[in-house]
Structures are given as structure tokens and as C-alpha cells.
Length: 203
Image (cartoon, rainbow, N blue to C red; front, top):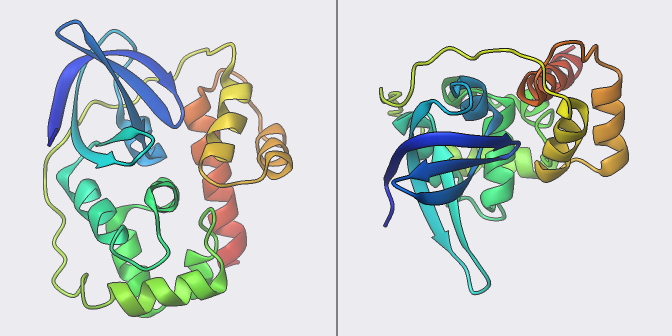
């Protein structure tokens, strides 16, 4: 099992990153919460990881904190929630905020997350309530502040990132193209889009 990777960040293509670890490039899928916390390209990064083995692929998922990885693992135990959906949930909401939603039975907030309908939100509340009862976020991960810079393909990458998180192509395109993309990275655009969705759902 690969539990942690430390190396040089080579690429950020939401929802994937490429990390060079002693000459080996690891392609890792990550939530937008983690992507937002990553340092600039060519800087050192440490990610807590979860390896998922399928018949057709070995998929490696990376998280900025132990708490986020723990929540990802808990989500995978929920009936009907796969890795893609779990990653989408963690992209649209912080782990601690998710716990509050579960405890309060806030289906409105949960249905604002990518790929989550009313039935799935209700199932999450029922199946996760006991698991988060004693939740205490764990420290760990990277603390480097995000650096915002010019990224030529930011809009295209942001649209692709949303599609990978579960949004339909036309929905993803509409969400991103309504934003001001000036001097923003793809991570920043996706985060802004997800915040807008959450705000609309809660309003």
C-alpha cells in the first residue's frame, strides 16, 4: 500500500497531478481542496495517498491532510459512492463542514455537490451519521499557501476538471465561462464555480 508520497510537483491538471519521486512520476488524482493547497510547479510536495486497485487500473488518490484521506475512505464505504463521487464531494466541501451537514441532516447543502441527488444525500446522512459522531479532524499534510498565476489553458483545464468531477460537459462549460478568468489558475476557477453552486443551493 502506498500511504504517502513526497516529491517534486511537475504538473497540475485538475483533477490530476504528477509528482516526481526519485525519478518515478506518480499520476495522482486529488480533490480541489487539495489542489488548492498545492505549491507552485517544481516545488516539493507531500501527499497522503490511497491506492485503489481495479481489474483495469491501479488508481492513486492524494490528499493534503490525513483528515481528508480519512473522510475519503469513509465515503467509499457508503452504498453507491465510488471514488469519483467521493472526490467530487471533497472538492465541493471541507471535511469538517461535511461532518456538520451530516449531523444536521442538511440535504440542501449536500445536493449542491457534484453528482449528489436527493436520494444520495439522504443515504449519505443515514450511513455517515454514526461514522462522524466522534469525528475529530487530524492534522497533517501540506501547509503551503496557494500561488495564483497566469495559466494559458486555465479555462479549458477548469472545464475538464469539472467534467471529471461529475458535471456534464455543457454544465461545466457554462459554469466556467460565466466567471472572470483573468489571471486565475484552473484550480481557482473550479473552486469559484463550486462555491457559486453551493451558494445557489443554500440560498
